[in-house]
Length: 192
Image (cartoon, rainbow, N blue to C red):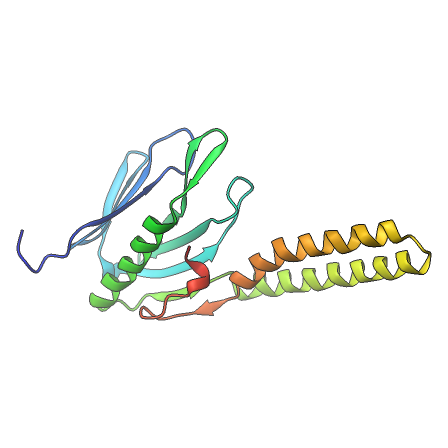
């Protein structure tokens, strides 16, 4: 292998319990991918867009996602977890992080002009914030009502529920704030 060739970096995950792993390799020629009996190589310059996001699911609270779009419109998805058993999704935080950072470095080196975004789309994010505000107003009204009629057990329940809701949903909304970024400054909140 010539000295100028960069080492291949690989990442693989199982998107479902049944089926083969999705495998990705960063090679000199571009992003090589294989899954579901299909394969291909995307030149780094032909990757038109990357959207990073934080997408927890019931079985894995720390799950990150990268959506890649080719100039021809086709898409690839990478997630930071992999199915292992019917009840276990294993995090692959370090491998995912290394792969995503290396992908951005190689795209920058290739002179890519990809659109780099993170989080939810602006309209989806605005709707989520509006919904959170409505839920907050509703819960505040219920809390005031519970305190006014002396229903302290109900008030305590509402405070506990609001804290749990704020922790779970608030973290999702905070991490998924819409952002445009550069190859040199990949958003930390959207990486494990």
